[in-house]
Image (cartoon, rainbow over the protein chains, first blue to last red):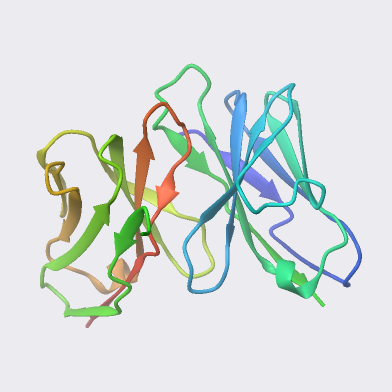
Length: 117
Length: 111
């Protein structure tokens, strides 16, 4: 099946620094990718929809200036957490539906665990 | 009111028993329903999808959908310790491609 990778798988950073997380579709093209955040013992919450060649669509309550999303190609979306704070520590997961495929066929990346000290 | 609700559990069943997981959703326009399994520290993996009323079986897993009651369930037969995980119910509504997840039910299968 289709594969989505994320890099890094985990990252520890100091408060106030920025962290970039990459999401790649390895064997298919994805014009749309989704970024989720999951806090411990909680479910996945959609943060934003990343659109290739256009601006991302952010969910209510998600600061677009803090969580910068760039979907520069059909296989790569990046999420940059700017000026990270300890409350940003979470598990970040991306997913991608196959372009032109059934909208329900989404493939999840393995996730990136961010710890902000 | 949450859009997708699940009993948080934890739910414990003995090995070999049937585990029953339930989910309700609020939007009658919801069209697609999914069950994901998530092991601790890992991302979700798709177990079942269901789109029409009734039952859908895949191996030891059976998904049941009742749109009139806005209810979807997952049955796991002959539960194994390796089935111990958090099970997430997800719903897609309308033309949106994104999924809305429930809070998950933690299942423990006791050897």
